[in-house]
Length: 117
Image (tube, rainbow, N blue to C red; front, side, top):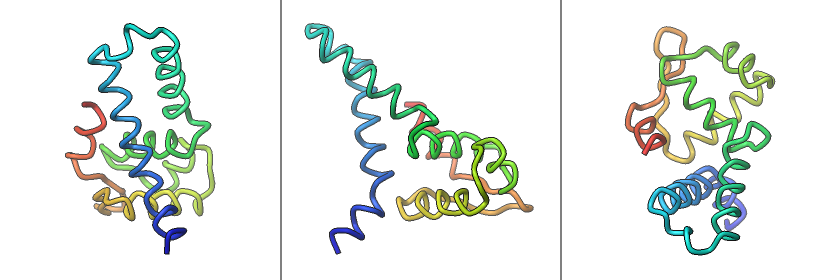
């Protein structure tokens, strides 16, 4: 059970950490400690990087704002159809609202707003 919960909540947990780090940086919480500030900046960059699964999922969410096909997502993310479907499933498991409209996958607009906050 714990293994299932962990694998299903990876996006949610990473998203929470990412949002908290960005909020702390925006609120200048780390200004007094340069080492912590630098670590937070590096971690945010690593999370947002396309080298991380979370970073690719963020890019996927951004692409789906206007609607994207499986082929288009695979091309932009440089991955297989199977990986695109796995990412879609992971996002849905995390509670991200995804719908298929006219052959294009779209996300709920509130998710996009949360990512920009």
